[in-house]
Structure formats: C-alpha cells, structure tokens
Image 1 (cartoon, helix red, strand yellow):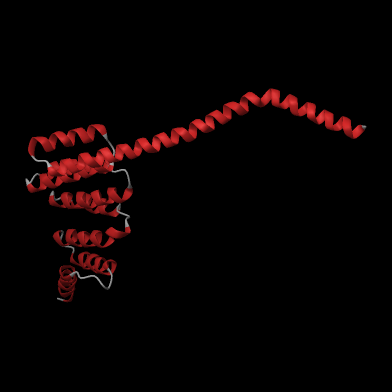
Image 2 (cartoon, rainbow, N blue to C red):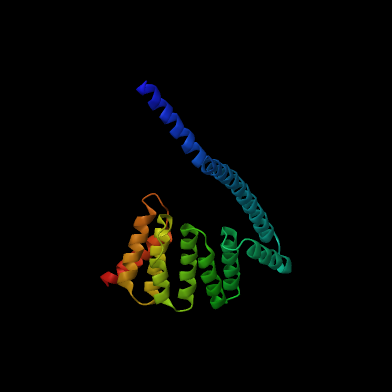
Length: 208
C-alpha cells in the first residue's frame, strides 16, 4: 500500500511540475525552432549577399571610367567591410600608384586595412601599404607595418621588402640578414634569382 501511495504522490508531483513549467517548455521549443529557422535564413541571406558582391566585383573589373567608379560606389555602399570592399580599395590604390599619387594610395590602403574582414587579406594590405610608405620615405612606418604581418605565406616577401628598405637606409648588414631570411623562407625548391643576387651583393659588401 505504501508503495502505491508513493507512486501516486510522484504522479501528483509530476502533474504539478508540468502545470507550472509546461509554458516555459513550449516557449523554449518555439525559441529553439525559431533559432534553427533563423540561422537557415541568415545562412541563405549571407550566401545571396556574397553572390551579389561577387557579381558586382566582376562587373567592376570589366568596366572602365565612370561606369567602373559607379559600380565601386554601389559595392562599397551595399557591402561595407566585405572582402570585395577591401579588394576594390586595393585596386584603386594600384591605380593611384600608376598615376604617381603615393599619398592617395596610402590613404586608400589604410582604409582597406580597416575594411579587410580577415587577417590574411589584412596582411596582404599591410605589405602593399609598407611598399607605399617606403615610396613616401616613411621607412620607419613601413618596417612597423611589416612587423605586424603574421601570415606564413608572406614571410619571404616581408623579409625581402625589409631588406630593400634597409638597403635604401644604407643598413647593408641588416639588408643582408633580411635577404638571407627571405631566401630561407622561400624554401630550397624555389627559384628566386633576383633574391639570390641581393643576398650575394650584400655579402660581398660585408666582406669588402
């Protein structure tokens, strides 16, 4: 009898608990389902956004003059902080350098660095920015910028550029060290005849 009463008491407790918490459980289930649906919608939305930005970027590359500028403005306004936003700024900076407007290129690259959505792209921007800073005779800033580059695939490029900067500053020992590091980072199988020449040239200077 006591066992029966215990089971009955447990059943009453379960009924009471359900009455008190059923609404919370239903709400939690609704929130969970909404979350899953929301994530699916967001994922689809993001895919569509990326596709639109990609299409605009392709149109930008194919266009010229005023049309190109218009497409660039559209992409930047619709997709700020995207990879394509940063890529357009990189392209515009290249055009400024062709026009011998290094300061204009620097401003664009500084903006691209802020817009780059990931560190790999940001590191590429940093390398370009360092080259422009060196062109502007701002070598200290160029070296500081290169020091922030962490991507493994850019190590050789960064070291060679450091060597070039040190050469311009008359720091041949540091240039030789940087060129040697660049050659080492490039790997044994790489073909870098110009870099090898730089290493040899600064080594000869050291011996002289």
